[in-house]
Image (tube, rainbow, N blue to C red; front, side, top):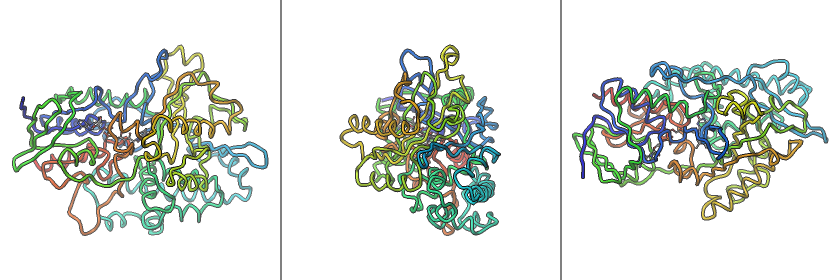
Length: 505
Ligand SMILES: Cc1cc2nc3c(=O)[nH]c(=O)nc-3n(C[C@H](O)[C@H](O)[C@H](O)COP(=O)(O)OP(=O)(O)OC[C@H]3O[C@@H](n4cnc5c(N)ncnc54)[C@H](O)[C@@H]3O)c2cc1C
């Protein structure tokens, strides 16, 4: 048995572990990262997934909103995100006519015309603009608090000028305001999906509010941007920065035990090595950390998304006749009306997979062809990144391979409903990741993309000051998605865990 020392040991080299390491090392700490997998990055990797094709896709996470610009500048990361002019396109059929709700990132004539076609009264378009103006006000207040110690519920509430916004976003189920403000099922669904990505919930459960919030507050704008070069570009930059700062990263080093005493903590790897440090940060999920400490794991919802990565010869034509370069540039929603989402949620709870899954997708290569070999790009090849909603891990238990096939069929049928040609005729490469696949490959418990249920970004009034990263052991912290204000590609819990430690030493 070999024993080594450092100031801080980090379990896991996901992007948050790397962010924490970067801040600590820049502050002069000796940091060692132990990663169970052969590769670093966790849910933020890019890979050549399709043999014979030089296309480097973001295998798991694919869009960036929650990563504060200040982390990029603090760490001097050469990492760029590309804005999309299109926010979303949602095809629909009305009295045998195929059309679509087109929404630009900034309200414009095309968006106005699209809302007017759906609702000639103009009410729906006005409701949309008013609602998102209110959300923007809220996001601007919340975003700057994310890299500071947690505010209390009352302190945060006091920052929001209009109590009604706080009330419908925090206190009342999000489904209430959506159904009150919008009358079209399709529009309600487009609003709702931000509350469901990564969260297996009805619109009328508060957990959906929390998910909604995290999708709308990033950098104070809630804009989701395309990582240039794919999500792996972020990891490469973080790796460069931490190695330059002297951090030791070891792959294929699974941690199997964590213990602590008054003077420090000891981490044991599967190889039997013991690493002694003042502090331990867990980038692994809180459920895994609990297991490593011999404790009871915190409860959480199952992961509920399946991810499909596709390489196409070209983009498909749509029944509505819209240019596919517009339809797939932003988020393309299919069968995600409010009532469809609610219905499929109930079905999934009963253990059934819908024959027409609510799905959403976007084409990375329309914004950033750099992930393709130039020859493929010149030939018109494109990627599609598809998320299937309400596919909780429990649906796949005991029969992952067979149910994966069923779910894939349902997702493609859902897309084909709005296409003028079957998507299958254009696919040259495809990979499907169920929640169980995601757990097996990168250790996200039950495939939960946020490690565990998200929390509101505040602490209750009667609780101790906190960064949202502490555990019941003063030597052990969470620096990953499972922290309060973790979840998503943000670096926020990595930053906050580093600050919590630096405040102590
Ligand atoms: C399919 C999918 C799509 C997503 N899409 C988006 C998106 O578009 N935008 C977005 O913002 N978020 C998205 N997310 C969520 C986001 O990717 C994650 O919440 C975030 O990347 C988590 O980062 P992390 O660094 O905290 O943890 P992880 O990336 O999970 O890294 C944890 C690391 O710890 C390692 N580890 C675990 N146990 C041990 C152990 N015992 N010993 C050593 N190492 C261990 C793991 O191997 C892993 O490398 C998505 C997630 C998934 C799965």
